[in-house]
Image 1 (cartoon, rainbow, N blue to C red):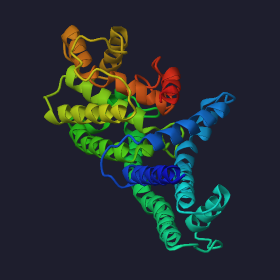
Image 2: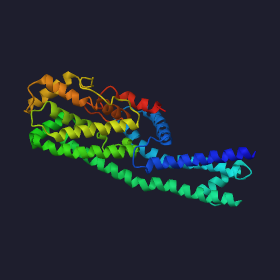
Image 3: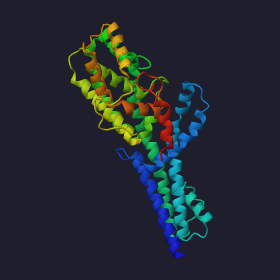
Image 4: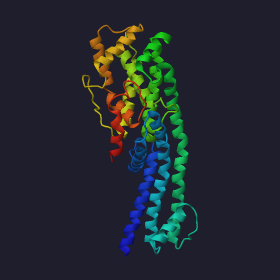
Length: 359
């Protein structure tokens, strides 16, 4: 019997340690960490939300439903952590000499929630009660302390997303953005855009992998999305570099590279498969006909274009192949609103379902 109690004690201690480690990885560790418990909570919650989504008939309904997904997911984490700590300490109290599992559970709950209605029975249980009460407060404090950090990162992300509507329309369009800059600011004004969005991509790469719930936080406006905004900027930079006849701006190259690296690393966190060594000539979701139509639309507005359309297409495809797959997959799992060349592609209806099924 003593061997059984000893085994239960170490099993309970292991469960508590794993739970605390999960909380630290989720909110304290300043780098990407794919935490099993956090994944289980969010994917289980997504299955619940999917039941309601089946009854939604319009995008606006789906958007209202999914707007609650990430906040509720975050608020579900502390009860999950506390429940596992409760179970772990229940085993430890029983192993330390509490007569029945029910009494061990009452002792664990009294200590974890600092209710104090069960007095300690021995020095060993006193130590356990003090440690459990401290852990309970720490786990709840972790979420409370990091909520301002999460919302600060969200606010910084949404500032440029909201400003993009003025520059690229709603939904954001790379073609519309180039046309507006040509008409209002001159294409040289795009240099400042590439600088600002390179910084933006670097920030979301850090924040959306270390605090992955941010990926699912939806914009205040239903027709805005950080994913479609990213796609519009990357396509605008790719079109400018490949088809628009302007002096080369190396900042556009840097913006594209910062963008596809950020999207790839966010996709890696969610285990979205993609080719990290994509080559020019690999297939992309944009057809040559769509590219030609975009160039014709730009030409009608007087935007200067490269004469060699075939070479322009090859160059555009060479840029787009770096982010094509991950952009479409992220638009799918976030259920992004309609936008050309990103959330309108065929991967959208199935990506979220695949994410929910993946263990």
